[in-house]
Length: 406
Image (cartoon, rainbow, N blue to C red; front, side, top):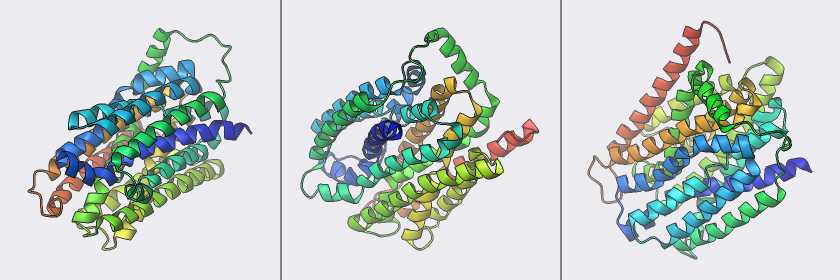
């Protein structure tokens, strides 16, 4: 079946990518104890994944539009496997950073290659749901980086985990090379690199692109910062949970994360077909709710950590609908570059925000069990204000355009 040949290899790669992204949230205590890392060190280590990821997005867009997702992603995953091996052998912060930089580079195509493949092989009306299924695969990888990873640490240490990840990553690369079909139009003459770069410049100058891109990038970056690292320490230091209970709530949060990707994707497809409501409008509504849910964290959450993680996980996925929205606006031959330009902004934001939260938290003296609860109020408050600014920009852009684009 064609769908299976396309979806499952890409889904496996993205699941691995998300496991890499979120694993530090569970092993952070081991890294602190073994290597003596501080909050800023931990934030930097985890966020360098994003900076190498972001740095490769523009060349990645050209590679995807020029050579296709199969060759691009399968080769890049080998760099991730090498990074995992180096990470597992590291004895210092600098060694860990080198390994994580390679991991970020190696998995930089896992989502964008999938989005490019789906644009090539499926109709634009189906993209919101199919993209949602891809994100579900990422959610399953993130799920593995919660309780399963916590349990795995009872049998091996974090070094053993990353050695195993290196083997799994090579296997995923082979699956992509063997099973994923080539582009439909492999017999066509490739456009010149000069033309591709000129077309990329047109995306950068597009008003439609910049109406929503700041809000989407900041919202998704904040979600990565919270879900990928700082939620577990927040549950420990503010909600007062132990490591096992915090890991269980991260598991629940990731289930909500998966549910959000699948549910919002289906809703977006149905509303687009029935009422011509575009995915970007649904995305903005979800990102607004995600913003206000974070606002409650400034004051300690809803009183119930379970409700908080469920809502954060579910509505934190809303920004991903913007990719499907762009696919309905921009032509297919630009799809790889449009997605990777947005992804560049997303991962720059994720790098700054995840590291920045650690820097803000470290401004307060550490407590006996972790970090000062007041430091989280300040850090989450900054995330809130940045996303609010992105939301204001979006509505001002629509007003100034004097027409409804989405």
